[in-house]
Image 1 (tube, rainbow, N blue to C red):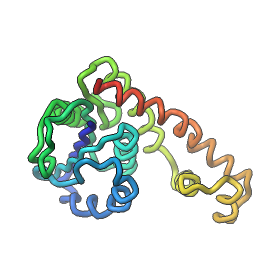
Image 2 (image 1 turned 30 degrees about the vertical axis):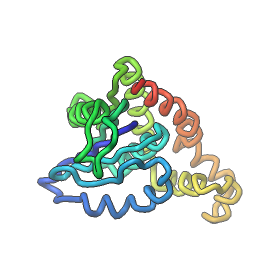
Image 3 (image 1 turned 180 degrees about the vertical axis):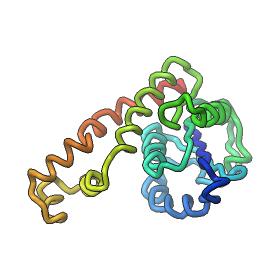
Length: 201
């Protein structure tokens, strides 16, 4: 299992964004319902938590949060106590302990990106953290123009179709793909997901 815990950054200065986050993620959870063991919920203060059955889903949600830029994110990989409770707050197990350790470490200024993986296999967790932080860095540096293309390609359009939708040339789309490192992100995601999975084994 994969427990993802996210804690809002600078909430005392910016106010509580948990309700807005929960609402904005409704489409994500609807699209990934087969991988959701327990839905996203506020656990304490300005922190949220969800339990997922897939490393791919955990990675995708973590990177979705990285794009938003307001959250410290911890992914805990490993077993959970069965049966799960009715909510994340009512559940326990090694993956929950790992998620707590991961999000607390993600808050540290020493981390280049506030996204950390922890699990029962320390070596794999460290490798996963390195790759996931690299992916998050790519996402956080992507321009609005790059996201226009990335979002269209993620919806299944090809570059020609994206060019037509944006009313720009195919060459311009290719340039945006290269600048936004869209292909590099796509190829690295399966590697990161495998490492997250290995962290819990």
